[in-house]
Length: 305
Image (cartoon, rainbow, N blue to C red; front, side, top):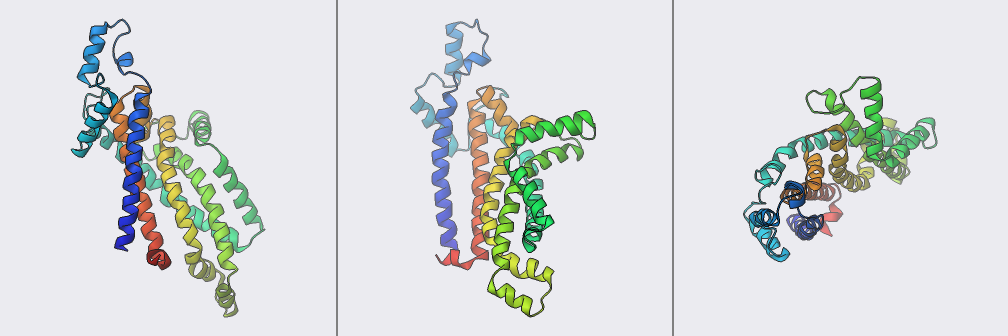
């Protein structure tokens, strides 16, 4: 197990290094921050002083070297818009996104496993058809469209939920519901297919012949084998929730890392963009490693291979 975790961690570190290079150079392709932070009639001398203060006059490879050196010391520079260390700004916003994901993912797994298992128990039945129809709609509907419709229906028309903010539990209902929609739609389909395969296995037929109850067959005997492919897909969906938070937080005015990332791109705050992407990528890599370890624990063949 130790060797397995070490190999997966090495793969994650390599991916992280590639991401760091891409984010650094792509962010600088958006233009000079001096165009946004200085008046339009600012003189060339003032622009030169601004770029000199933040190191933008240096060649890109020098700037990248400074960025890597700072990264080794956990220093990602000063935020242009907040005049504070970029790491502090990102770490202040990250708990909101983490809380949003922590509320969403367990609900996604619970709803998907129960719905997919019940649908697989009677394939072709009314519940199976209804669950398949709704899950396909959920999996194929864009988050931003659902978020806008949700605001129009529940906040503007019915006035039942607030449009933005995080002050009360009501503020979390729409963002969590929107984030749940797509991963739940995908996972219900995966659970249904996986459970149908498990329920047609010989050991399930033997259990039925011995008089084991339907509930025990589905949730005790078939579920463990049926969950193996679900774990893999769930890891991708968990990463998708973190990425989807960018859109949801922007629509609902959630002060999380997704909204911060969009604002920073618009304001060319390079240090915050780099820090936000790096922290988000680290979170996704940690999620993937945890899921891989879980998969290895459930299926010992993974460990030994």
